[in-house]
Length: 161
Length: 181
Image 1 (cartoon, helix red, strand yellow):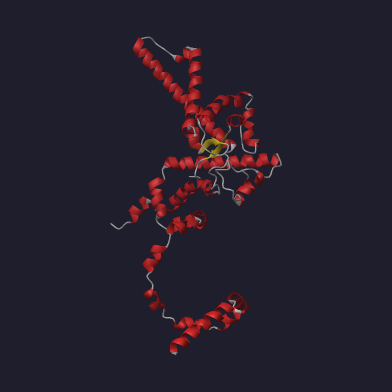
Image 2: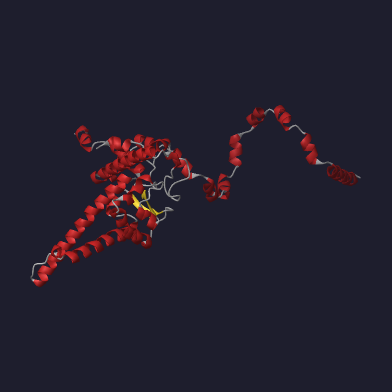
């Protein structure tokens, strides 16, 4: 008798479930209203996070992570752009280490000569652009494969290239 | 040593078209370097011939031979270095290099055409160089013929970091005097 009841119940449930359009039902549920009635803080406070973490096999999860794929999605250049290297140099011993290892009188002289050269290049370019009534911003900075498509910094726009 | 020069915002110029002054100074340095090397080679040749034959030999006394030798030497000096690395001694000093118009490294063909057409920019009253100032891509005549451009290869950012590091680096002499005995 009990087996018959069980079989009937299973059959009824199956028929009812087939008859219900779950998608339509879900569409009618106001999830926001439902969530507003849930005391999330209360639920969270009842969770023993330590116990939960103890049950998690972190090594297993990490072993399933494809690090290469994640790194591919990271824009390293954008991150490096945000790093203030000057500030790092000032705050750490790195500056003095580099100074001791790379700075020679000859390289310093070269740096200064080159910097002066670039400064004079800009000076003449500015005047020529003024005479030719040319906007420096409209001029190509360099060959396409060597210059990134991002807009030039403010000082270049003002100074001309 | 002129710290303000490096403190100015000249970073991020690697790959940008080089200006007239840098190129002119580089050319001047190359003229000096090539003639210096030529004079040394001529002196070495004279000395060797004198040792071998016992008679005094001076290349300058043979005007046509010395002219041909000088022309060939100048051709080799520029064409070889441009083919090898895209820069001559003078260009390396000023931190600039020759590339194709699309920015890739030049080959022997471009280097040879550039060297052969370089004198054209000079002999017409230097008008060939005017394009470095007026042309949008800073092309001189020989750049147009060879399909090349001159760009900054100097890493100004690295130079600025070296300069910053130098400012930050402790003076070894001061450290020695302040150290406890």
